[in-house]
Length: 116
Length: 116
Image (cartoon, rainbow over all chains, first blue to last red; front, side, top):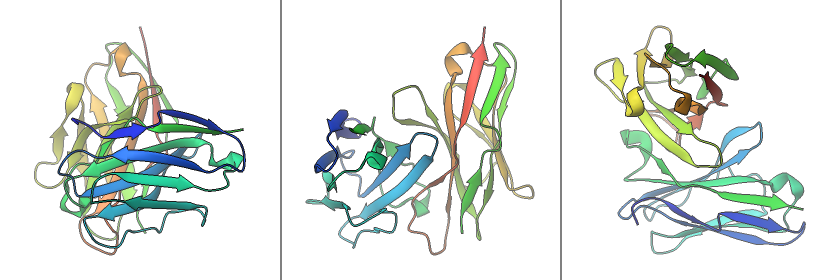
């Protein structure tokens, strides 16, 4: 597609359930990022994939969070045993390569997660 | 460590007046600097970036920003504000070289309100 596509756009889940959030990056982009935006907390880096390299997981807040990227394209962010503090907007982004080269990172519309 | 500061939580401007949204940064090396805008219930949209060269960068929707190395600032400006500019604005930085993996570090955002 023309932009970064995320699904679902909205998800309400019960505390303790697992959720999967999907991201389809811009075609040809090798770098893929997940960020979390919580109310009043700004944007928090979660994880970064670059090509076939090992992902940078340094931003994942706990071992309940994991992500994978299959075939160098689509990525899934999984949150296990969701907690109310996981309620946030999860933003996926992609760029032609890692941003150290100055390439622009393009964001999707986000997946709005509410844990009740 | 990299960091970005947006000292104003909110900026109020009358339509037709010039606007400035402030951003200062801290990196150990040379920075790449970005501005993004977020409209209500939407993802982040890229506005402009500074990579190298001319310190005055022009971007989308009539916005511009000036890189000031001595003051470590990258303030966003527009000569004449529109009501439709009302949104949340994020400044972001990444290091050109260094230990970071290239992910963007964001400020907490500044809410711009333009009144008719």
